[in-house]
Length: 555
Image 1: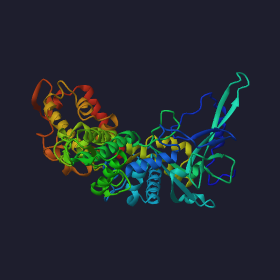
Image 2: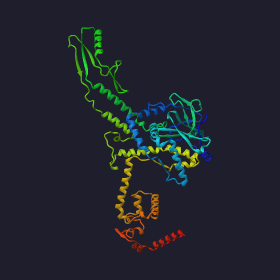
Image 3: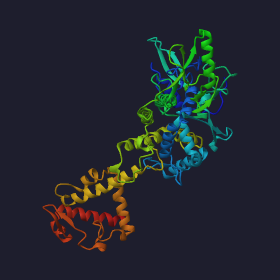
Image 4: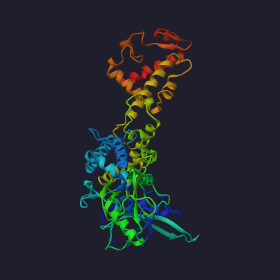
């Protein structure tokens, strides 16, 4: 079959390396791709706990679940915390990328272009929500094939129920051991215009029913979750299927029970005298049709309607009574006594919230939002904050894939270089989680307080390096960077180092500020004159060498 779309060829060196690498184990890639042998055929039928027969059915089920009020509220809370688009946007962090400044500027500019192609400032919420609910996201990458250096021209979303990733394995027989070896694979996508259904099985070479698309023409972003059989990508709301079904059934049962047991039913004892059995039953039936109610509860809409075609739940009891007993009598049957109990419904609702990883306190109307100290924030909020961070990291694969294609097409980097860049490139999402900001502020406050308490013992029990590394949690790179910044500020803006700054120059602070702690007497300071007297010959020689080096630098 002729393949559609563009493909970025690998270099001859990369192709040679792949030919030399052999294994008897297939690569384990958690993307839900269907693995087939070269030139083979495949079908789309799967079985997932008897709940979905195809991947498309599973996506449809996820979307139906997201329309349930409890699920919708939880999903909305997750997406609101993960994506904040109010006057802010996602930024790319290249601090750890050891490349020239012009390369970093090009990468930053192309990342902004990718955000524009996605219309992320306007559609970021919807894009993240669709990825979270469906568990996968497909984009068709469109370029000008006559001028690929122009980069990506347009991105179009694809319905995940109409496309499937295929991995075609290359297998050969080892001449010595006679075992099957995995020599690599080809990846492509199959697009089915009418959708993938359980009754369809397609041949890879069948051009009449499906479209074969090059792998580089599709951007495929998954949830990172895979089913136990490593065959299918599942969404984050997959584990909420069972709790949601239980909650629905229990709510319907509760409504039906309340309607059935709330009223006091009547019991009619009808005197039929000496009538024969057939005539007695007819007489009883005529009386029942004439007097009874015909109210029916519709579980799908929650309405109670008058319908005489079905048996009614609120049906009274009609019993015949023969001659010789009591005459016609009407009594009542008491209604239910525990209609106000909702403990079971509350339990399953809480279980549903837990399955969606959302703190229950956020979804309860009675609870108030806390804007106090971070120590007052519950452990559930801490877990939720970490869960949001994991979601953002997984969703960032969308930016990685699109940015890779954009940079390679424009000739900024090649794919081998991008593999190295990808490890150090990070994305900073705007933060709207109050807990994260409070935590950072209070941690810094506690560190400063501890550093102030330990200050009298610096030089006797602790060194300044120990304080910077163990209290302020600075790395060697941080220490070097901060020292350079302090030295630069001291030269450019001496007014920043006022009389309260121990690092200020003598011209600004005087001798009283340029003092050092006496290691033998904590709290007692020494003047610069005392330090000059205590200098050893080696220290004096070091000062002379330093002065000579400065003179040579100045010419």
